[in-house]
Length: 391
Image (tube, rainbow, N blue to C red):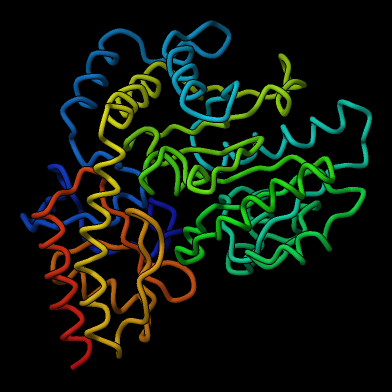
């Protein structure tokens, strides 16, 4: 037998982490790494955050699972908090970003079809997008590297250039039901949408009676300095998919919607066995305790400004390695002149964890709780790594 017991769907780095402390991870061999990947923007409050640990321990001693056949107090609490702090009126809980996107797409289709428009099912998405790994969401994302070997594509998705409003308008047909866009493309290479573009999407959606969906799986939950990235553009979507940082490391997904968009999602139209279980809700409510505390999001913005101010000169110092810094808040992309995998490997050799992204980008997605010491350490590691790569 040549296949490994763990299905080899990842090109895993040969390191095993034993424990985490704040923004740091400690490997089984004792090596310490500054985690500027955060499990791909997941561990928003770092590792072993005492409030999250206490909340999960307390819940684990009481109840893990009872299914959605019954009311779950933690769901009701979390849903109300998300509603109170967003555009939304209602929330569906699941386990991942892909599931949140599936719910969003189903909700948009049902919105039209429950009103008799059976022909409305197509969704316009943007090139370079990533919306998950299910058959529907890889078709929505449209990237060949994700679709290869999984033909045929799920029908119903039309792609246009990200940020191009003319292409968006031209792609709308009588069959179009919804528009799906990431306010900041994450896996695609940390590409922010222009605020005018996001506002334009709202205008177009209203003009043609479409459902506007924002995928905030990676850019949501405080990563940009606001609870949701679309808030910077002062635009209100109809549906938002959320996950990653919401559970601080515990698998949680959520589909947030307005009453108008979700009014036909009645009993039996959608479901999840594990979604919104008491453990997940305890973790997510604990995350919101911290993120919604007075001053937290403002501090994320201040921290991001400090990181950018120290990062930009270092990037400019090594033009053979880097191109530019782009992104928003603590969702940062470094465009590279050499293969981004080489940069990520060299950074790791110096003790800094980062993540590759599309468009030959290195993603920096640190925990939202980093401070001056972590910023200085990370920038120092980037400087040393880039110096070696330049040589």
